[in-house]
Image 1 (spheres, rainbow, N blue to C red):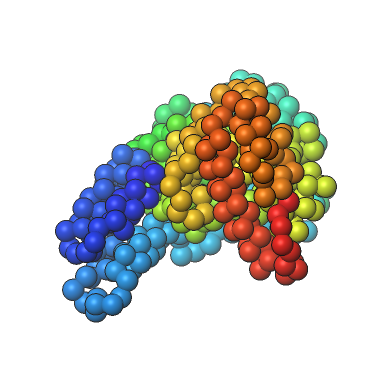
Image 2 (cartoon, rainbow, N blue to C red; image 1 turned 120 degrees about the vertical axis):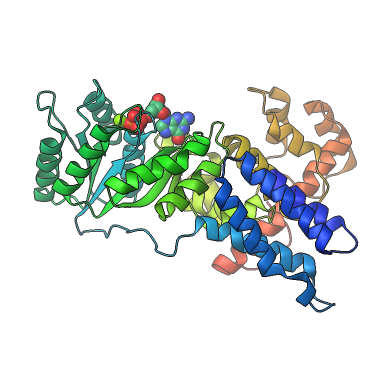
Length: 442
Ligand code: GDP
Ligand code: MG
């Protein structure tokens, strides 16, 4: 999705004159991209109309930068699709909140419950999990296993078959224990059916949650709108979490779910593991879709440190300190690529989109798109360049190229790209922490 939209804008930027025809062609391409990404037709049509209305070429006096105005209109419109006027309920630390998870079976509720609890636990909260899924055999064991791993208290039953009863008991128990975030996991069915919605309604009525989160598999495509709406009709859905964004998710389903529930997307799941979970932010997300480079994602990641054994390099304390001082190393750039790649098709667009500056595509990017497992030459090269002096001598460049089985030009190209990232990072962090200006980079 992002790649196509970014390309459409790029093509428009290449046109000498931006007139009605150029705008229409750009809008057609965006429309095609959105439809192909499973965004609901009505939504796409509205978006197109809104962009056109916002731009109104005739009224733009000459001298204005029409491209900027169009890009801004597209940016605003995509943000609007994802931005709901009402922010979702956010739990308050130290005050008891009940959050209920709903969604079809297999959408990722149980996994996401634990990720959500873990996310808050890391911030010093006291979360707890209640398993009110009595429909699927093994549901309680699954939650128990996840919760135990994350050291989060849980409640459930092997004998009680009434989900409402378990929910009531579990919530009461954890309220007594002064947990500040009580999460109720519910059952799903393979299909949307009356019995499921009735059960959700009852659990919701009995536990009176502060927030109901609709969990959706990111790859379900066009079905998202109806599914989300159906849940919304039985419980007061107040937020959406989209899972499996690491797979073949095209992202459009997420837009549709937001539209159907009029509730914001708050997190995305990017893998099966506990730490594969990201806060969702509209503007950086859309910026990336449109190819406007942004590193704020990395800042988020730094602030959101995962479990020690799975921590990426840049979040380990000694490197984090360096990074916060504005030192952006090649290895961190490499990790950023890797983590973007994990995001599946959308992530691959991000790799294009995220590069700050508008240099021509580099070989480095192509490599990063195809990270063959255990590619020793690449790793070797990165090792060599881990604490690089940006003023590489010719002989050293050649040695690196030889050692990594790359062309000298590729090494140079990659370094150019690295410098763009590093500069961008440095100025970002300067604004952030007011670090003193230094000559070189790490
Ligand atoms: P539930 O039936 O809604 O409770 O769904 P589960 O939590 O049991 O998840 C169903 C399957 O999806 C499990 O195999 C999970 O490991 C997997 N899963 C959940 N979230 C993600 C995600 O973000 N990415 C990937 N790749 N798999 C996920
Ligand atoms: Mg489950």
